[in-house]
Length: 400
Image 1 (cartoon, rainbow, N blue to C red):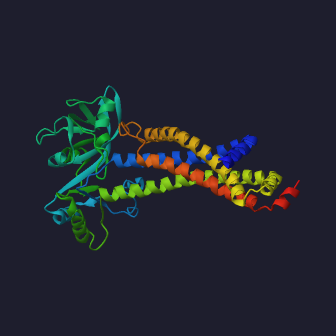
Image 2: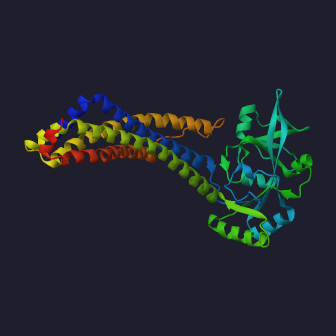
Image 3: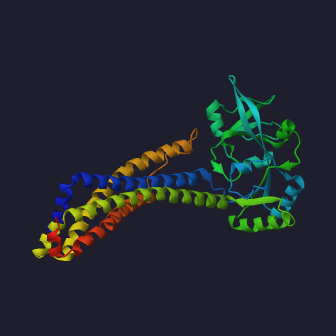
């Protein structure tokens, strides 16, 4: 305890240098912990936003840039799967349900003078209930075509069942409003309009190619078998289609956000390295200034280990104070940064509602940042402390 008191006294005597070292540690800990919390929050948010359609296989046309991650905007090219290949997919996937998807965009008038270009999704009437759930209204009937409006689109323009929309120059009644679905591996109708395929082709013209085909596999454990069967049958000569499922998409995004998290932690680590250099400098100057004091301590019986402990305690005190302050500050900053990132990421949607920033992983980043800060301080202070403990009493007392 006596040596700890000596260390605290020495730090108080040079409080400006001590304060600067503590500030450096605080910055490093805050950078590591808060950026780690933000990366973890974004990762969790993406996992929550992506609808895990675990029984779905998605087939898209293969393009030169098709082998990227799912959802890559560079893959948004005008390509389609020919109708004959769709039939091959249907045979390969039997007895599982194969769903053809038509997608386009058109200017839509929502009433009250409001209009805008909106995604239009065309599905066979019987396939719509298989993929989508209704929040209000009903599904379009075979003899009474109607449109289904995504939940966010309906909320933004005040659309309810029974409203009328003008798509291009054609009027259509709103049969229902879709339930929120999230960002899925297949279609994303929350900001789109879904219509029966016969109405779609009557408006946009007949199609002999489809931008997407979905296979609903009854048992998730059969997904790999279905994918292999489609692959061997459709891609036997040339690579015509790309085949994937929600598991691959989740894995790809997890890998991306893990890399982002590592990058953010690296930035925080650099801040702590700078703080460590500052502590090393402070401790080394402290040893140089107190050589005579060290000589007196050694001459009256202080052991090398005791001198070493005094200087190590100084580094420990700096690390503890800086890490505790940094841990508290990183809790606040991590929360604010994460909330801001979530708001940007989910702008205009309700995906971020009731989202919890702090969980065990977030607390782990705070503990890791504090532990790293303390360890960095001790490591930086060890060499100057070792030099001080190795000074011979006679040589130390001669120093001016």
